[in-house]
Amino acid sequence: MWWIMLLPPALLALAPRVAFLLAGCAVLLLAQQGFITLPAVATLALMALLLSLRQRFSPRWRGISEIALLLGIIALYKHDFPGFHNPLLLDRVSAGPHSAPFTLYANLDKALVPLLLLALYPTLLRRPGVSPAAPWRWGVLLLSVPALLLLAVALGGLRIEPHWPVWTPLFAIINLLFVSLAEEALFRGYLQQRLSVWLGPWIALPICAVLFGLSHLGGGLLLAIFATLAGIIYGLAWQWSGRLWVATLFHFGLNMLHLLFFTYPLYRP
Image (cartoon, rainbow, N blue to C red; front, top):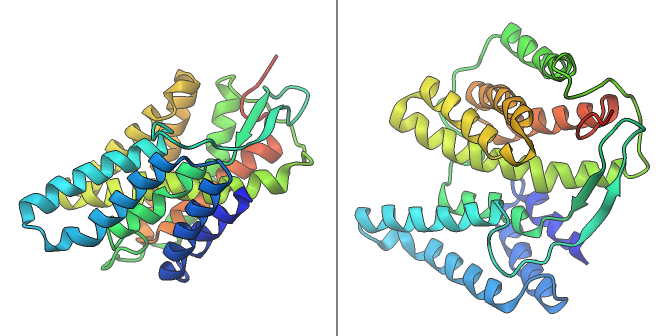
């Protein structure tokens, strides 16, 4: 029944109240099945209570509560939040003969990130007052997605290797709702939007791209550099549209191109 956690992020933009209700039900159901422990449920309940009460606080305490909630959300994102036992879906599978082994989990903790961030920051999904970018800019940005993957080939991290693994549909839905949406909600919808208010958009963009790259440093320096450059693409998609779903689709599109036409996740000689 882990798949029930797919519903809240899938419905977040269309029916946020329904998404929040389903998330609460999903947490309780998954706790009964042992995927989430009671201490994690209790901590999530405290976070939900704080989110519901923080508008009554003074500005100082609202700021303190935002920092506390953000730390909890980052812990969920990094899988440091205790009490989650994410189910293993694929164990050391290979997308192709020259692709490194790949393991896929249903990251139930990460699925909660966009919901909690929306409760914390109401303009997460859509930033008002965005001036539309010229069509040619969007064309260049779209072309930069395959160009970045080809750059990774030139640097030796990837090889061109078209394939369609039997687990592609599972990968796609997990990557869209548990990976791309969660990462874009944190790095673009929240961090880039917040920093844009304080520092300006053209300073916030590279800062968030570098932070995004650093979050992938566990996969090696080349992956971190690749993720930083990808973060520039996603950041521009968000900056020019003001819509989280646009940045999410760019992220998801790059990941799917990577899987279907290149060695995934890395080249294995």
